[in-house]
Length: 272
Image (cartoon, rainbow, N blue to C red; front, top):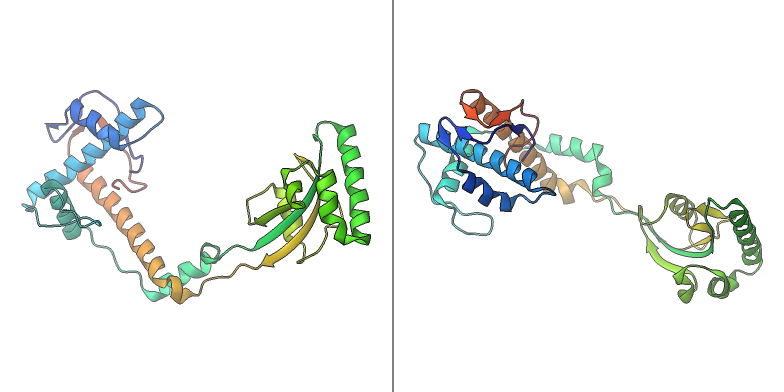
């Protein structure tokens, strides 16, 4: 539910129909929050929205059809009436191929698998706040890089002997690393390397100074439009529907006396 209302008083009613505090307390169980007052407020908003819709279903004399939820369970009569009301009164266009393609072109990163690189490193631990120790660690890393440039086969042995990381038990191998899985300086250095390449400079992070070598690299791939077209269309239609429901509820609220909950201009979905 979008935060488009504010609970302002103890008594809450919609068109003169009071919503009991006990109902709100029970509904609060469905709205986890850090503070009980927040859960109560979310619950009050949800029940106000529900009552608005039920009142409109009454006005339009909408009966309870036999409907089921996504799991095949039969909806309760009031829930079925709300579904029937929204189906009748809220109409949104289908997402055509052109609209779906435009969304795909502007959000290709959402339909791409990330590049993954197997990482090996040797960590010389030091705090950036300790300038002297950090400088020594940097010097040690430079020395290790020079040795490995001459004898790359020593990486496992040097990691086991020198690294302050638990990966030393595996020759410094950290496994496959994807974007966002490690600290930024390490990630930038790792992903700039070719498969099997040793970084020719020490890489500094808050953990210390790293010697990094890239292992097997799997480049990310973008899924073709045809593979995600229906998923995009479903997403766009759902977003359009939720926006339309918000606008519809704002219209209902503007024509209804509501006590205890203050509506603001609809700027997001009001129903789940």
